[in-house]
Length: 300
Image (cartoon, rainbow, N blue to C red; front, side, top):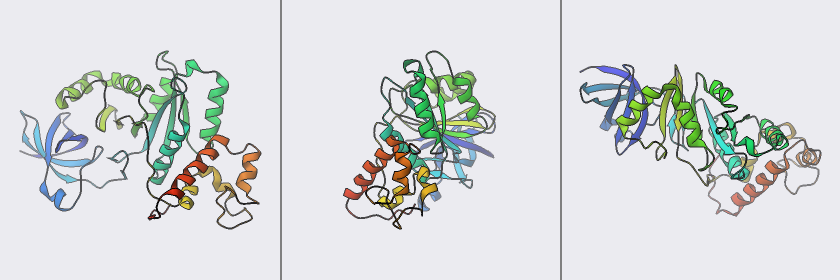
């Protein structure tokens, strides 16, 4: 009945829900050729689809258009940036968990914006310290109070014109942030939610929403832990951008910046130029990787 282009907003149970150019959401199956070629359609994929029934809004995904990139964790395609949400307090932010997320995104070359919620529960000094720590490793840092409706305009502007993965642990306000973003297109999003029978408050699958022209966000399930893939401690070192200015200036070539003498990274640490918290997490993660059985194959 015709071929149209669209974007996959969710995949579950072998069905792919495509937000098509005609504004409708179609329930689609993927052609068998994808399985034969071992290609799995992902949320965020731009596709060509054929309509089976306009009345029942069903179709087939015929072709996946070339991807700009592909995220492994969470599984998504054509992502411009990640927005990770943590609480500034209640619960206290698990910065080891945040650093793990930054490592995973850096491995996949995805820029990260960090949003700290519940800033009404902490003083300015705490916010300033978090801002300095994470801006120094190349992230944008935003402070909001969803309850008091502060700082949200800046976050909304940062999302404009991009496809953003929104992630974070449970209990930090990610659902509240999602609800804030969805209020921009309440009618459209409502129809999408009804079409795919999505729960309003619990994200079980990665799902994409349109919240403006060329502006999308991918809502992902909350996480309480993140497991680093197998890599060498040397590869981990390369994923800490604040170490980069000092590479090649240590006394020993290939310095790991942990126990070696004459280490310029440790000198910078002592001078307060590198975050003590970030450095402590680096040492812990390097030891974690070292303790694993040697089956490394990752290259930074």
